[in-house]
Length: 75
Image 1 (cartoon, rainbow, N blue to C red):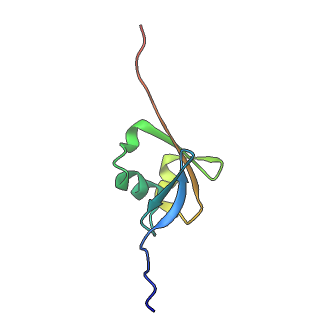
Image 2 (cartoon, rainbow, N blue to C red):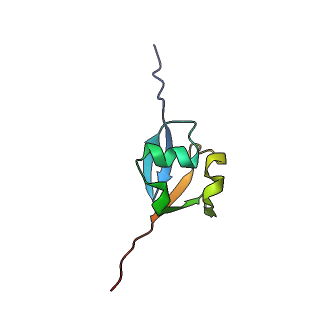
């Protein structure tokens, strides 16, 4: 019997389970999700992560990522 390997990991993104490619950093995850990094803030495993640190933080199976969009507007 052959066991199929999946080439994804499961993370929790904004409260929902998602399958993403392994080996992504936060900045690469945003690119993969087609999210404009200039318009968001990221919380990773319960801590706010500053943008300069995004390339250094590896997203692993079970990671909890919250992406919050900045919204402009006003009267």
